[in-house]
Amino acid sequence: MVCWLPIVNISSAIFDCSAPYLDSCPDESLPEFAFIGRSNVGKSSLLNMLSGKLDLARVSPTPGFTKLINIFTMNRTWRLVDLPGYVFAAGARKEKFKFNRAVDAYLKHRTSLCCVFALLDSGLPPQEIDLEFVAWLARNSVPFVLVFTKTDKVTAATVQTNIAAFTARISGWFEKLPAIYTCSAMAKQGREELLGVIDEALTAIRAESGQAQPEVVIPPEDLTTTDQKVSARTARKKRPDLARPW
Ligand SMILES: Nc1nc2c(ncn2[C@@H]2O[C@H](COP(=O)(O)OP(=O)(O)OP(=O)(O)O)[C@@H](O)[C@H]2O)c(=O)[nH]1
Ligand SMILES: [Mg+2]
Image (cartoon, rainbow, N blue to C red; front, side, top):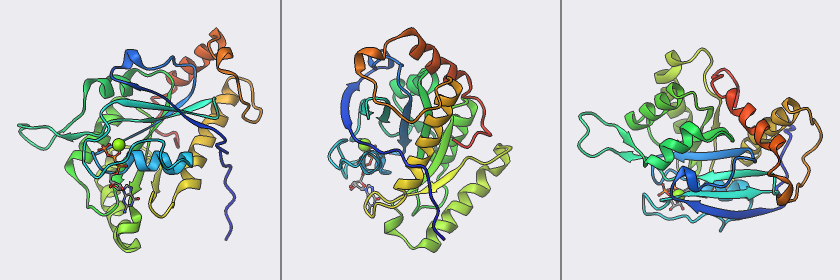
């Protein structure tokens, strides 16, 4: 069966900045989609795969490589954000995730954040650190989808077993489960589906702000108008709706 998805066509992908703090991020006039997950889970690689530019974000086999909030602008109208990964908190009584204060502030307060792609390794059974992080996202009303990465490294059956086990652990926390996707940056699997998530969110934002036309390229100097900022803030106010598919 052929499934037609509305796909964001990325014609330009540009590195914007590396921000050490929330306050040093660019203004909130453009919708953003951020990648988060354990160190080394494949955040930067997935960002590159989606953008179509394999050298946009820096990839490394060394866990903890991405240390700043790295922001990239697509088509001059929306952004992808590569966040530093979380790690095990040293000395915690039980397994506990830890990420830097800038990431905490970004996820809680960035008004233009539309959706977080929460990445999980498809080759692993549910990890307590990831479960805790998903609970944290829900508690803090951060809109997110789950993305199981590196599907090329294991069999399809293993991927499905691990997804089912993870889903079973979190199902009691939600009225409606978060949307679940799989991807492989290596095998370029999952690109259309994840761009579909972005496309849907951008379409919803456009419709809500009364401009349900196709995506248009807006010159940067026109993006600082009050209208644009208000619409980004309005979008944020709808963040707590966990039943939303994105
Ligand atoms: N086989 C396979 N390897 C992958 C895939 N995605 C990423 N990797 C590898 O996993 C390692 C980590 O990838 P990154 O994209 O840098 O991971 P990250 O989550 O950004 O890591 P940090 O910035 O350290 O938190 C690199 O060696 C990648 O080549 C994938 O889909 N398949
Ligand atoms: Mg990285």
